[in-house]
Image (cartoon, rainbow, N blue to C red; front, side, top):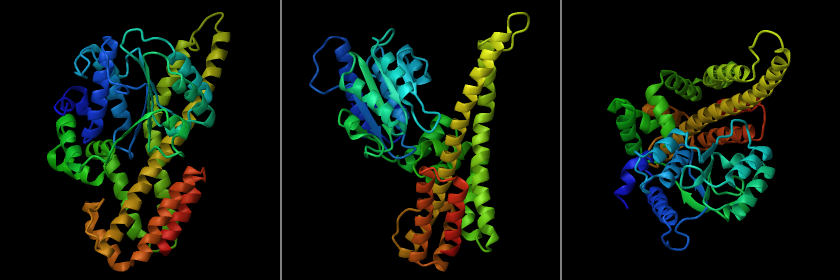
Length: 401
């Protein structure tokens, strides 16, 4: 089985060999079930919870497992129509739920559960992948729980969440799922996949892998996007750039503006295309007699779409800001490592000189207070405190130490 997880769709899982072994074994058992062959009890189950730190590849693991379940050969070959369409997101029996707002509503989950009750049409299994299952509202969790407790035949639920903590996934749902824990992939594995899959130069790939904090997607952006590299550099100039009281507001504005710009870049073209497609589909751009009703209906639908897009933009902005705060927290963590002589690997090895300068100026207690301020800011934003207020309070503490 070890050799199998290095080929086909399993190559998508970067540095996750133990998890790949578990999922590949379950996929093999699922193929036997489809063929009517006996399998060991619990070799394949109907509900899975995939957990791991950000960037570890939870959603990639879910899609990979789904592809193996739909594979014609039963091994996740990566070549058959079942594997290719699942990985491309176009398989008719694989439903991917990606929350574009701040939560997954009960109405959305009820519709999903109803669709999951149907038998597969073209594939071996009907697979439901729920990314960010920690965003389920209480009502949505209850709706999902009923389906997980009484699963339809040949339906598999794959839930992705940061951890199996009750704050992320309710205890009742967690108790009915088989847990697969992903780990932070090693830098060497991330660098290799950037070289092999994305064609990144080895030096750039190794740098991106060393500073991404184990986040594969972040490593790819840093390696291929100059704007992402500039945003990171801007964030890491903050700790040593807080010399005057006015720097507090300047730095806070830089953090907020960078997050807003990133969210705007990510959503502008997509939003315009969605609005144009919706108007066309509903006849809102038609001319001639009898189109007034269609135009009114199209405009009403566009307003609903714009509300959804606004929620998605808010989430994107918060996610981008959170990424910047993670970089900032890692800087202060590196200062603590240096001041205490712990000898641990730095998260920002390319900023070792600045880290050493900060370590020489601050004591361990001061560095720790700054780190705690960043973590408190992340918590405050998670509790819906206005980002600008939370960031300005944080930067004030960063300057005072």
